[in-house]
Image (cartoon, rainbow over all chains, first blue to last red; front, top):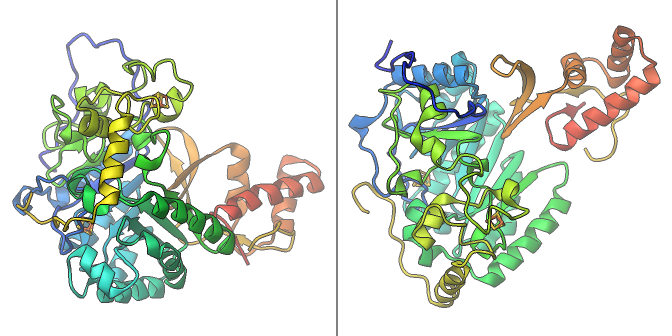
Length: 379
Length: 94
Ligand code: SF4
Ligand code: SF4
């Protein structure tokens, strides 16, 4: 057993609040260590040190609690999860607990032998990130020389074993022009799906926004490329495209709604409603080392802070899209409007939309500044 | 793999897609990459027959037998249901 305590009966009068719907998915960030240094990394600027990471046994206990709570799918991520020497044991523990297990990796740190072990441990699916279509651009973006060639070797091993593969391509100003070739690369590597995600400005990406901000022509062109590729690859490659929300009229339903579908566990066991939740002042987050996961999901102030739609301000409260996007992203409202409770500034109805348009205009008309690479102690 | 399925197609669940009993919600689920599809009893009955060896005609015959329903009706439903699954690459055919 581990330090994770069992649920205790509370003697306090319970607040009248219906029990939340159980989560479907959990993101387990095993470590913040990563050989790469992508300037758009969604990790926080404050990276956790190795000695604070949950142990194998602690993760196994978290997985059991997650299944008991209703989680079906586990996304194992980081940092680079392969930087954990106990990755195979962690995957085995997740499968033992009954989770569908997806590994999100840059590929660096995986070998054919290690992938064979992950296969034996029951890994269900692999998501391989690509930083670019050639060594030149990929290694520049990832800040890691030789990364692209290693990744291509890993992709060949993934295909040899037959893991179902999704290619993750994060797109931005420096590589949006290569979108068609990126999709072709996914097909060539035997991927069943490609997830094309235009950079979301959170974490390190927010710090590097001016260097990553695409131009409007790039975005329009990307939409045409995706539409054409969906016809060309129909039945062969599923194409998910997340357009950049700064260029959209309405925000996305961040996390499908706060505290509705998923939760993130950080390397040290802190449980977050979303990646960037820690940027919201005034929220405090519980840790699986001291609080049972079910209690965190059902009762914690952080998960209840923006759950549902009752708390939403106008114009959201009376908007027909209220139950579609739940007012958008809290962290974006914080970052742009300076108020986590505000309507997402992406929205055409937000009084802060003009600020976003000014940011786009200024950033996409200036030459991109140098990257601030994501490195420990570099924020 | 576009176009409608035929009675002679042999469906199978590709690697990375599997049925799962969700004890918390008390339902059967089809799990796949980025997918957790809650199945109704009919959907589950069809997918439970998908074994990669039998074709749609014999799966439909088995279901028609079990539910005492006309095989033509069942087969049309099975083709439509599995066709939808195939379009999402949750089912493949040989
Ligand atoms: S985005 Fe890049 S730096 Fe961040 S964890 Fe992934 S591979 Fe590492
Ligand atoms: S007003 Fe609020 S609910 Fe309506 S579209 Fe904008 S963000 Fe969404």
